[in-house]
Length: 394
Image (cartoon, rainbow, N blue to C red):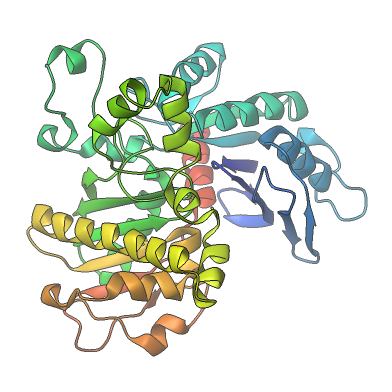
């Protein structure tokens, strides 16, 4: 069966059209820098490779562009939308309602909408993708795969907040975790490579960033919490911050709650520190001597190193760390910066290996490193396709 995968991130859309269970990719591509005048549009098949730069103001326009490329009379890969059996959608926040992949109906969409406030950069884009796909691919099953599902194995000691108990039992306020599809995929690849169940820290670095502590294939802790806004420093999100800052901004600086939310989610992180949200731009400026960019990169790496230390303690040891996603896979600069001063844990990065770019799983640690340092290209689209196929077959 042909399954179209739509992975709508906060500022990007990745897509693949796959034949399952053969795991054959018919076409793939992405649109990134959504919301900018210089959005990148990529479309690849066995015979075609297109890349163009044009303004993509929002996810709806981006998804319409994807559909037009799939159906293009000369370069497209389908003649009719009826060829597609199912559309698999990555949905970031499933709350306490969804711990597994589900077929989408009006009730599911209503639940996704109810969670907008908890994932304001993602769930609206995810639901937009669903609504547009329902219009364009009207004969296909629409399936939701939730980012939060993989983290449901966390023990209560890790997912419970130190707040009144009724907020958990009645209002479901707890750590949910995100990027679960990616953490699940790369940790399974790493376990296969290591040929044993292991203590692994996965580091997903993109516009959104998160880490997970994984023991014997199961998540025991993760850096994002109730919403995908805390933890590491991200493209436009502040990550961890003292909650008193929120009340100070409201009571002393005159911000409304909505304005504080906008600052912390859309104007902070690397954007707030440097004026740039894309790490490629920040690295280029840092190399030119921009001190704000240099400091922001160091702050980003420092936060990640601290979390490596915490998760090594939570796991009571460490066999491997895994870098993945756009920044994790492609930025040797950030991997090197993160790997600095971790020799106490036996983590040593080989500078030459770290410079190699590849789409394959690879080691970048020195021969003497006690901990494997792996770069594992994530394939959330395959993981989503596999879960969609399994749901429809079963």
